[in-house]
Image (tube, rainbow, N blue to C red; front, side, top):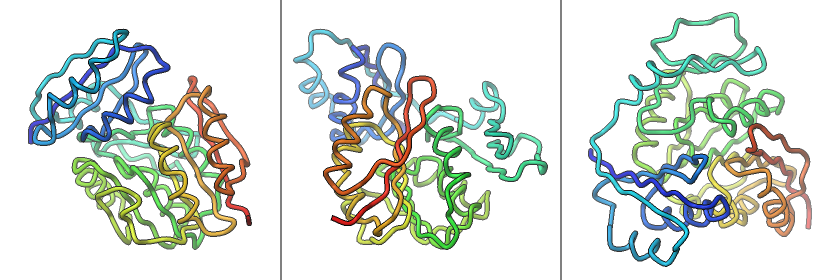
Amino acid sequence: MDFVTIKVICPQELTDYLISELFQLGFNSFQELNDGFEGSCDAVSFDEGNVNQMLSPFSNLSFQVEKQNKVNWNKKWEKNHDPVIIKDKCIVRASFHSPRPEFEYEIIITPKMSFGTGHHATTFQLLSYQMQLDHREKRVLDVGTGTGILSIMAQQRGASLIVATDTDSWCIENSRKNFELNGTRVAKLFKGQIEELPDSNFDIIMANINKNVLLKQMSEYAEKLTMGGCLLISGFYKEDMDDLKTSAGSHSLKISGFTTKDNWAMLVFYKQPY
């Protein structure tokens, strides 16, 4: 399947807003850059007129759209990346890397068109925190699963039930393959928005997306989280933490910790009684 990529050069303060708007127009995989960001979507979902209409009012940005053929991300990763080692306890590798049984946790990832190999600071932080969070017999929801890497760790940590969601068909395809590679049993792999997911009462919810989508979905996280349950979110900058704390607090989610890495942040909340 062909896909479309857009590269937007813009001030940092516009990034989250523009990603959120492009998400509404069908773009569902994003990578932030030093001077802006890149996004992608299936070619059949791309409407050039809507994109131009959305971006044209901004005089302080430039953008370029390209149609591309399917990329073999597995070969690209093999060429450019080594395995990721986290806290000397977890290794994230591809199938072409040699097994490393000396690590307590070993995750095999074939990236394809999805982000989430452990190299990015957001994924790194979430995996690091998962290794200290009690997953035993917990019901886990992985929102924006991407490669499925957080769900895979959840099972290795003892989760009793895992539901993974994403809006991107590439991510659904990719995560399904990675679940098979790692022997991960997922109760449901759901393509669609979180508000369309009928399941609720999760003990742990994880979302690695971007600030504006996290803000929009905060009420859904709170509704689907059990009392005393844990919410882990990442995909945003350190300077965005206060906005997300305020939003979470308005939904009875109490901050219990945070980490930062390379200007990226992760927040941890627990659901408390009203």
